[in-house]
Amino acid sequence: MNPFVRHRGIAAPLDRSNIDTDVIIPKQYLKSVKRTGFGPNLFDSWRYLAPGDLESDHSRRPRNPDFVLNQARYREASILITGANFGCGSSREHAVWAFLDAGFRAVIAPSFADIFDTNAAKNGLLTVQLPETDVQTLLEEIEQAEGCQLDVDLPEQTVTADSGTCWSFDIDPQRKRCLVEGLDDIALTLRHADQIKEFEAARRAQAPWLFDRFGSP
Image 1 (cartoon, one colour):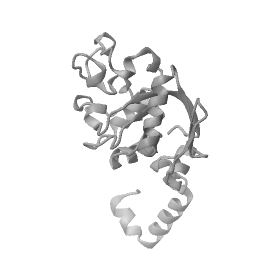
Image 2 (tube, one colour):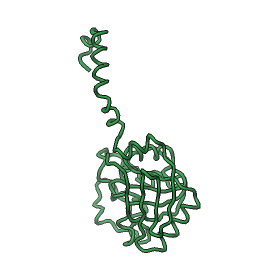
Image 3 (cartoon, one colour):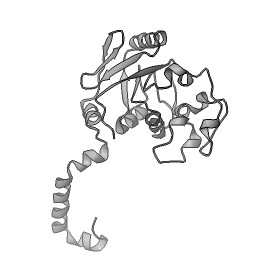
Image 4 (cartoon, rainbow, N blue to C red):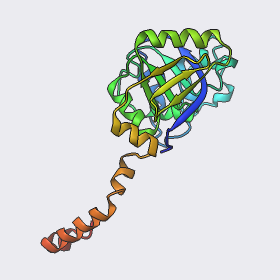
């Protein structure tokens, strides 16, 4: 996955709590497991005025002009500021894939649903948890300033606004390391490839009948 070290980008406000995964990526798009192509379907039912599916030509679907990500000032947004309990509801990794495919690198909220939070970390999307009062301050600042950008520094664990205001956030050290180095679960495992080969060789010597019967692993 792509490493996350430091990112500066336009922030978009979505001041709603309890946004669930079916809103983030509706169920009709879960038939595909390609990990790409979901960007146009992020917040699909809010983004468009008519329902769509995997076969739809999304470039021809009428868009809701009132939805924040359809507004010109936020079309290039790569950071989302939103409400508490973000990503609740059913488990679907597609929700994170849609964010990444749409160009987002970070989501900032007072709290996140556990499964969404875990899926985000395993795919390179940074979730930043800040106190609700700080999130409200951020929402107000980016709504008032055209093209407001934020600087998110993961090594320093800070979020800095154009105004110079800076907020610090906490993150699990192992999650931080994996995001900075771009390591998913497979990459972490492959870092121990030599030890794995040594174990397999020793196991083959100890119990050769297992390998003769079932073949090489």
